[in-house]
Image 1 (cartoon, rainbow, N blue to C red):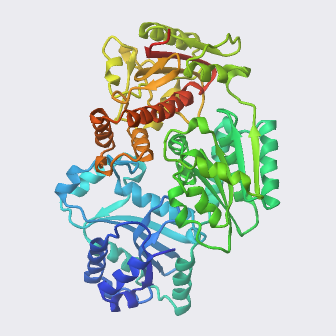
Image 2 (image 1 turned 45 degrees about the vertical axis):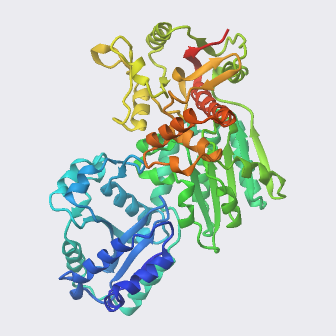
Image 3 (image 1 turned 30 degrees about the vertical axis):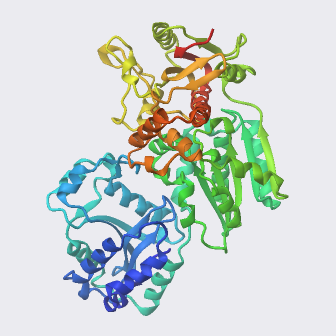
Amino acid sequence: MNGYIETKQLLLKQKPEDIIKILKKEFIGENAPVKAWERLVCDIKKSAKFKQLHNNIIFGLECACPTGGMSIDLLIAFLDKNNNKHAFIIEAKNWSDEYIKTLNFSDNRRRENSLHPQIQVHRQSVSFRDYTDIGEEYIVTPFVYVTCSQQGILDIIDRNPESNTKQVKITNNIDYIIDEVYRISEQCYCSEFKKLEIYSELHNATYRPSKSVIRAMKNLVLGEPAFVLTQTQQEVFESILLHIKNGKRIIRVEGAAGSGKTSILIQLYLELLKQKDNKVRPILVTGAYNTDYYRSLFPESRDVFEFSHALKNIINNEEYHYIVLMDEAQHNDKDEVNKLLKNNVTLVVCYDETQAIRAVNCLDELRYVESRSDFVSINLSDSLRYNGSKIAEQNIKNYLDGKNIVEDKLFDFIICTSLQDFQNKLKNLIENNPKSTVATVGLLCNNYDKYTVPNSIFYTKWHEKAECKWMEYVNEKNYFDGERKNIWVGTWWMQGLDVDYIAVLVGDDAILTNDGIVADWHKSALYQTMISVAKSIELPEYLKDKSAKKYAQNIVNFLDNSSDEQLKFEFEVMFSKYLKNYYYIMLTRGRKGCIVYFANNSKE
């Protein structure tokens, strides 16, 4: 593990500024939190119980977690009287009561909110326990230490969106934590041998999923029928294992929506976890939001679904053979693929260019590797969607390109001419197919409330519920909510997931023309995609803002005031391309049929 890891004896002797120098060398990232480190070191040394601790107790600062891209602020490792190993994992926050009131807590870390500290330290504990080769040997205890808060601790606990992490202890007194360490370790004399063992294994800990992760993955596969492979998928699965054995370094799996790419990768991950080769380290990476859904269904395996930004904390030992299984690879930032290949990993990538939704991506790198001698490509031609139809997907593409579609007797592709027509057909579909899953998606526009007025059957819950909760609602099949008989429209694009019927309501953000979709960026709520396009065509840096919504509005204002028609055209074409991909993803989620309504349909 990277970070400062030393005995209490040495920590006591070293000056805070010397410890900070060491941390600066170890720190991975931008803007090292020097003041937070200084405060934490001083708080530890001032603790009344600190000097009473045995000299061989190990303290770690800014220890990198192998998953999540996170670091542990403070780690304390020691033995109890029965020689059980303990690891206290502490998340430190320099928060005042007033500052706590300004925070928007959630179960993720995005621009508009803060990852709740109880959730954060719980995930760090899981990362240490279940994703290092030493973690299973430790009794792991998480704490949150809020240094400047007097009354805000209860507020933090009350605003935790995950009930299963509310039991994580929060304190504003470091003495409380050090006293717990003292109480557990008091009767234990940690021998020099044991001290060196703990010290060494913390320094040398490497990424390795535990037995509990393997069990969780088995439960996931057994719990989701979609992960059971067809004969074609099984053949591809076995082919990939053979290519890995024969030394292929990059294996690309391409396939249309619903061809089973995610299912194959998850089965590969489980198979590689079970292998007895102690040098193999499989890593499952995905940039798709379907991971939120899988995490909600299988919380015990939530950290299986990793993102590429955390790989720097995992691939750090040349002794092991890292096999990275990368789903939805088109979502990675530039140079992510090149970095992996430079680190001598084996890379299995699945992607579909028509599902790219950001202008800043790694598609160029994925094309470039085709010339390598250790590259192999596998194509999945069949799809489990579309009820056996061979023309459904082409019809959807043609429709989004403004072209004519042909009759399809196997897949119901229903195009509605009005909002009322869309509502009526959707209600009839739900009533006539009570055992089918029906997902209503769309409304990616910033004036979505125009379509959820009292006389509409639709409602949204933007910022009220996590998107994964919407997927649970879809699977429960109880779509009409109370007396109003309203249907929840998910603004989630459902990548990697499918349902029996998909209903897509396209608001004012997209205009369907004879030449296909044209984006109206004034009406779009796809702020991150707008930002990615702005970065790609190098709009001015001063447009940036911490808020994605404000950043996007700055882009719109800049384009409106610009006299550069070519620049406006370039932005419109590129943004329209990625907006079309969003709707392609939505329209291709159905196994049996699709209903669609474009509010802005200017086709002749």
